Image (spheres, rainbow, N blue to C red):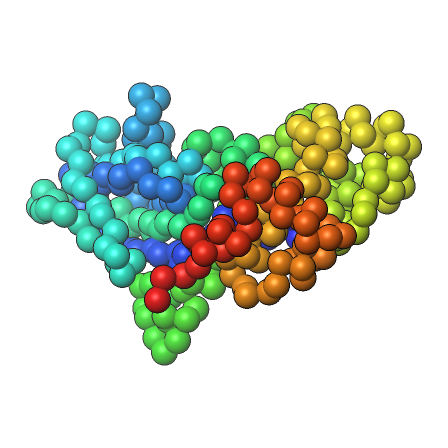
Length: 308
């Protein structure tokens, strides 16, 4: 299993959406706060990101990518002083600009915007540890896969064809992975702690890999250390330092996160889910789940079942 993919899957709560817009100065768009995460990519021209938290505006040029994992409300505009017009997402996922933008013939900017629906009830620490604002400036030779995904998505939205409705969500998922990869790569440079450092550390990454690949295995610190090629003490120290919690604490957290996902998405018996999550008995699993979630698994399943 892939830790990054698992982290996204654990938080995914719906279909991602995007839209492509070309605006001529003066213009300004306001995006309300949400439970998910949003992005903006400048395909042509330039603009300013207005963070919405009192911090200074950020200048964006062609090819720049901005990602807001915290879902905080913000704006983008041709100039920080330009009034903002609300952009809202309809229940069907479409986007509308509520109100009229000023009509002018100033420089044109083309921006690709989008949002990911994420649940924060069991937010993976890999994603919550990201800065509230991720700015990936366009640099020659940097993050080539991300640039390729941007080109494909932008082209599909600009020139829709047969299959567009199917390919766009897949491209958005690909884009999210490449954004996160780029962010973690940039963070890992010189980092001694945190998830970027953890995934860049072969020993810790190896342990995380087997935890996600075999969550039902009765792992011990010694066994994880052996997989990482370290002594028990050295491994325990390195894992806790980078990830921010002991390895078995993270293992338990991941098992419970997986259990919640299985309860919500499948009709598997509790006994089967307990075994898949590393619990020898249904009783032990129910007690652990109730302690973690504050409600028994049966009640949790009913509360999270899709509404028909």
